[in-house]
Image 1 (tube, rainbow, N blue to C red):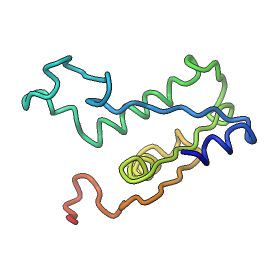
Image 2 (image 1 turned 180 degrees about the vertical axis):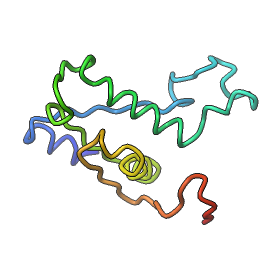
Image 3 (image 1 turned 90 degrees about the horizontal axis):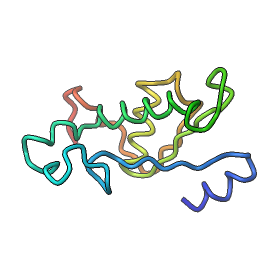
Image 4 (image 1 turned 90 degrees about the vertical axis):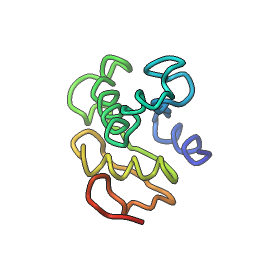
Length: 116
């Protein structure tokens, strides 16, 4: 994350970290979130959807108006975060200008029958 904070001021960029569902305070069912019957929202597809919703709403959150080029988004991530960044570019290429995926084993895609 050091590189992000070095590059952001030089590029006039803002660094935003999204909290993944079921981590930190993002518990969809409160203290019952970790009960087996409530884990169905803990999927890669849901995480990507959450990212897409946030990025689609960035105009109202950050005051960016106009096309997506008025406030472009570049995703960064390492390991699991890198995998999410890469998969996001595949699923939602119209929402982000690019992605950097470091140490991300992205050859394993959800629901495509590939295994490690």
